[in-house]
Length: 231
Image 1 (cartoon, helix red, strand yellow):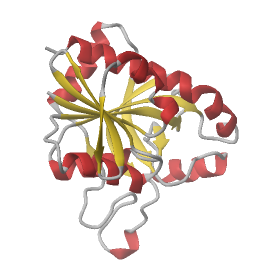
Image 2: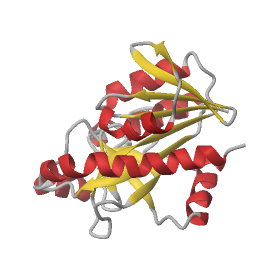
Image 3: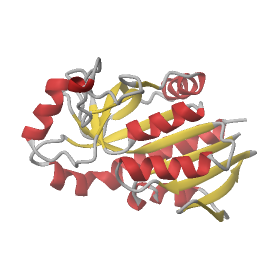
């Protein structure tokens, strides 16, 4: 299989560099990917950068040149629910844009872009295989909608505004919906594993600095173990 693993920030990729060795560097568009072979699988590890445009641009660059079988997105997210805590793992079921407001432009709902679905469903056999793997390993995780926007959510006011439009959302971050939109257009399965780094409220900035590297490594470790078991 040909698998891309993409994370927003270098600190979220550190564990992968400890695990994968002897990779070749390849440029796709403006993004450098490291190419490894693990148990017969071609693994492309790259940084998306932060935000929707960076995520869409860099995923599109590699999909336009490599016939990937799977896209894995890991990294961090802020919690939007009282039952979702720092360190929890979230396997996204869907993504939507929390900063897309087009209801006055036509028959659209909050989070929907014209010409696109209201949310991007990630259901696929590959996603089911990963959740089965987590369950066999006894790894606790949560599932649900994650919402995406170009702002770091670091105040309770921001958090409550998002929850008003997306009361069911479990997490918030800055790249996922853009990944999901691109993957849908290329008809490629996307698995998104986010680890909760903060509560998306007034303490988010302090919490993020403390937890991002730790929980990013937690998600990366699981992905590496999953790939190791692939035939």
